[in-house]
Length: 171
Image (tube, rainbow, N blue to C red; front, top):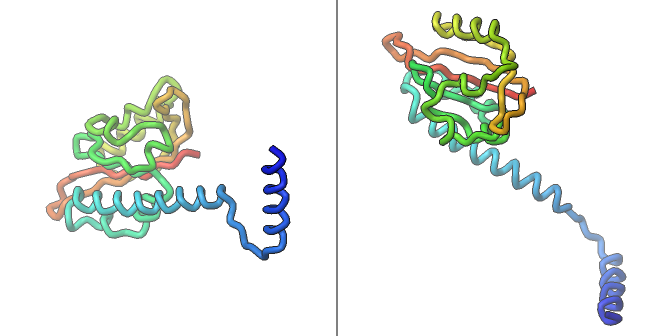
């Protein structure tokens, strides 16, 4: 035990003489998480480009790229079944994309979700109009969170509705 104490003292004296720039492990961990988020957003963007009609304006917008970094992006087909969910979904509400595919976004609603707001959203969707709304959604673990949703209809070259895209942010 005495040898370890001598070693630790010698090591401390040695390192105190060096002019080192130290990056903390917390910083490295945060940087690693950010790199993973950026990588996932590029993957999500490429997947969306394969799903959406080629001529839609949504595909190449900077807004969508930024949203994939910061928000959750959910894409439904014209029947309002989820066909895509970005990697950020897991952080926001605990669900993986695999768990939500084929479901309606209503799966995130519950007892505390305002029915009037839900009806207003439904009306906008039925009229194929964009909307922005704040709702109370539910996480996989049952806890609630406030969610800002910005949703837009997507049409093909012939004007047929093909998808709805929702950009969601917990606040």
